[in-house]
Amino acid sequence: ISHPTGFGIGSSFNSGGKIPLGLKRKGLRIVVTGGAGFVGSHLVDRLISRGDSVIVVDNFFTGRKENVMHHFGNPRFELIRHDVVEPLLLEVDQIYHLACPASPVHYKHNPTNVVGTLNMLGLAKRVGARFLLTSTSEVYGDPLQHPQVETYWGNVNPIGVRSCYDEGKRTAETLTMDYHRGAGVEVRIARIFNTYGPRMCIDDGRVVSNFVAQALRKEPLTVYGDGKQTRSFQYVSDLVEGLMRLMEGEHVGPFNLGNPGEFTMLELAQVVQETIDADAKIEFRPNTEDDPHKRKPDISKAKEFLGWEPKVPLRKGLPMMVSDFRQRIFGDHEENAA
Ligand code: NAD
Ligand code: UDP
Ligand code: UDP
Image 1 (cartoon, helix red, strand yellow):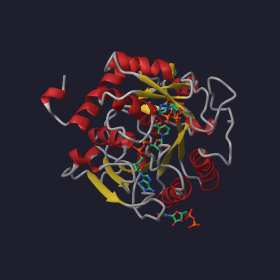
Image 2 (cartoon, rainbow, N blue to C red; image 1 turned 90 degrees about the horizontal axis):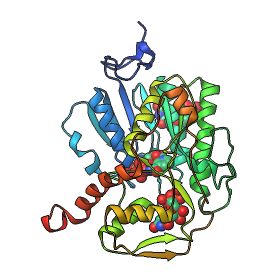
Image 3 (cartoon, rainbow, N blue to C red; image 1 turned 90 degrees about the vertical axis):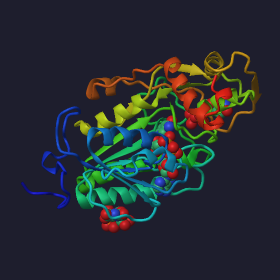
């Protein structure tokens, strides 16, 4: 059988990478850019346990070695410190492209979404790898349609403070589709909605990590604006399952991957109070510019074509994140573990 990428022991190139989850097959060689980050490291855990060989490419901008350290010494795991804005030569079957400064305090002034995505698409084209882009619900901007369906084109301010991220991901989607149509690269696009769980950055300013860290540190929960804006929060293991189904499936997408359970920020604060500290105070702060008023995924498409839907509701997922945060904030000290 001819080998399109011309490399690699154990690559299942002859099946075109299309192997149903759960079936026995030889391990794939997979790059996860941003694999030392929150979502990436959980994905790496699943891929390694499935028997694949994984190369993590990360510049540690927001990622941490601690997230993947438990794989050091495993011959099927490799970690490369590299900025995807620079070209990269590797021989692989699949590319999960997650590298991105993903939180509001980190994503400004960074060309990763455009140049980094272009490089990874160039790599996919050269070696015939399948490429998955982790796009975002932010492509819908401050949506005028609710819940958001994949066919909605969005309502994005091109010159606002969030534009670097929103428009960066929109451009990344465009590049992905252009490489698909123009160069025949096999691509997949996921639009990820707000996701939380263990290993999330503690101080990156996202609402779930902020509230959990604040409640643990006995600080007031900072609610921006009137707290009536909504988001839909997905537990990380559900997302990882969705990403893997998307990669292995037959459909390009884009697919919304999110939990349709919708909460106002005040309701989220209440769940955090119930979970961590009933006496936690709430403090109102001015909201940021261009903050989307509501967000909730329509996941009918992922249900139908990927057979996927989230399993972990907020009240089940939050406690699993809290124990991780407690450990990282306080260490293992007994007195704080109660
Ligand atoms: P994260 O910040 O934990 O992970 C991103 C990783 O990319 C980090 O390890 C960081 O060091 C790395 N990185 C950033 N720029 C890089 C560069 N130029 N070269 C190499 N590595 C680089 O964030 P996350 O929440 O795990 O997000 C992963 C992906 O999912 C991102 O593409 C993000 O846009 C997308 N996403 C996440 C959410 C969410 O709620 N977590 C929502 C929508 C989309
Ligand atoms: N690229 C890369 N690794 C590869 C192949 C390409 O990083 O294995 C980069 C390459 O440096 C370029 C980008 O991907 O900046 C797009 O590559 P492509 O071949 O599509 O475009 P071209 O180089 O022909 O403009
Ligand atoms: N938010 C908040 N308190 C915080 C951080 C964020 O009330 O300490 C609000 C923020 O204004 C937004 C929502 O929570 O309305 C979600 O913010 P996040 O940055 O987590 O995600 P995104 O806006 O990208 O969906």
